[in-house]
Length: 316
Ligand code: UT7
Image (cartoon, rainbow, N blue to C red; front, side, top):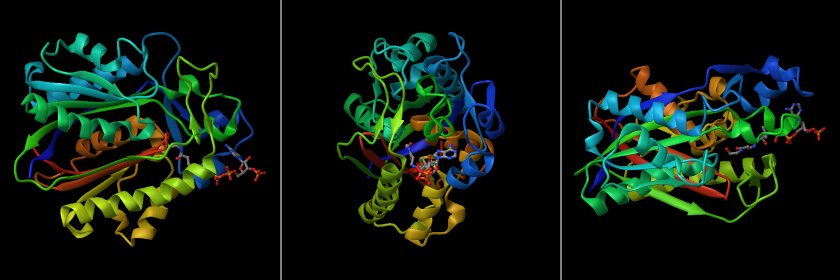
């Protein structure tokens, strides 16, 4: 079966770290509430001005992923970026990456708005683009600066989100296990402002999203396993969207799965939406957690409502 191999990763984080103690000074909250309800201890915020943005972070993460892969920009056969906080609707983030890195002219570049599922949606879309174009390597990015849209007086959202970007280079492979799931259920549980709305702030029905997440994630994992004919024992790592540590723990319990396979970095990243999975993958690669040939699952849920999952392999 034609599969996808994760060849390398890259990341970029803003300089500014915002701790729970910093937020205690802004809204009626506490470190204890934030940690017990979400598992978050700190997150990164982009600074005011143009120096740090969704596209600057995407470019830096993409450059690092290409370098780590030992590839040249000529090797990149498509560029897809998951984001809901793009700098411009046009040019999209991928086009800005294309310009900055000098990618080839004969490749497709596009952004995917599937909220927090954006990176996994982009991964699966990129596989289709490689098959369509006959190219071998895809550059897939998740980059967000959602804190630009957070109401810093709304304690129910401002403590959760953070900014950052992660990038992955994928290679089409032959005869490696692969499975995917994509889906959506229309709903307004999470609203993020766009150019056609007068709203300027994120609004979220946290409890409804939580209920949705703990149903969607185990369902996606079950589908990936049944489609591939594998069991969780065959999977080395499950990398879930980092929205809330309690959501991840609920899913582990529901699946009766070994907790050590489920990577977590939400404590120091917060919820970075479409960037959370590539940031996690990049941190894992940096820590030397991956071995050639390991099977990984990436699974996400998000506004829309959307869900997505892919079973891939790690290796050059
Ligand atoms: O990327 C995908 C997007 N989002 C998600 O995945 C979010 C999923 N949902 C969640 O993570 C959780 O629902 C939250 C972390 C957002 C909230 O946790 P919760 O346990 O569902 O809390 P809640 O919304 O039911 O609120 C409980 C109480 C409320 O007070 P009352 O009505 O019980 O008096 C809130 O007003 O906690 C209050 N509260 C806070 N208190 C201190 C809400 N935010 C805060 C806060 N600090 N930051």
